[in-house]
Image 1 (tube, rainbow, N blue to C red):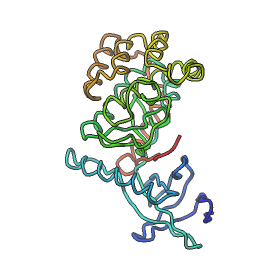
Image 2 (cartoon, helix red, strand yellow):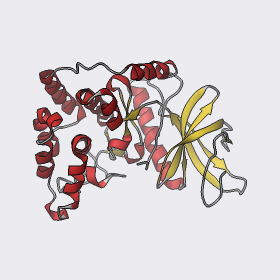
Image 3 (cartoon, helix red, strand yellow):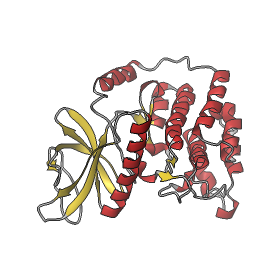
Length: 308
């Protein structure tokens, strides 16, 4: 049920775009944030993700970013679109909510993937995440709000970024960020969009994966003016899984990489030194990958801006 005060789309509800008249059946809520809610929807046999915005201007800004990314991707590789549909949902009360529809890909959050598959898969998942960031950086954008909640991992460490609400053109102020991943929060730089901003967030993400309690204890026990990336590096050096990457993390915290492509090359060099994971992926993870891969061309993802 949807009301003018609070928007809730129930399972089984069919919504129709006001202008393009495309119809979507609501399956379930995927997540919500300050600027909207994201639902898993079905159109014919395809599963998609639909984000309904609570503020037209805010969502339109996000859509503009996605449309620009889509144009760049088509020029570069002619790949799958970012957006399938953009329209308005009109309620019986007459109130309208903007929405857009994105592809949907099955996956799990990075911590859950590492628990199921083993921490030895961390280097590969990290490398694939850097490759995803390099696609954005190569087009002149920073992801902005990189954090655990905005990374999905499928079988064999395949990574997808979600929530493009923070994507910002280089040189502009970061549109959306989460404090603990923000280099400004750690007195390590500005909030101006550039590739090193994302790579700093990536390094914090690595620390959080293996020392989350210690990281939050560090943030709560340190005065704002005393926070520094050196504290993060000291914490990382105490984590067994991160010790091989200590040099890489030090460089990322210092803003020493030009972009994610350069950072990925350096990460890959560390991977070759420590070797590939020997533990096989669980059978159920492989089965999930095969099932999801069957419909991958037509069904894709979006877990959208402001979630987490």
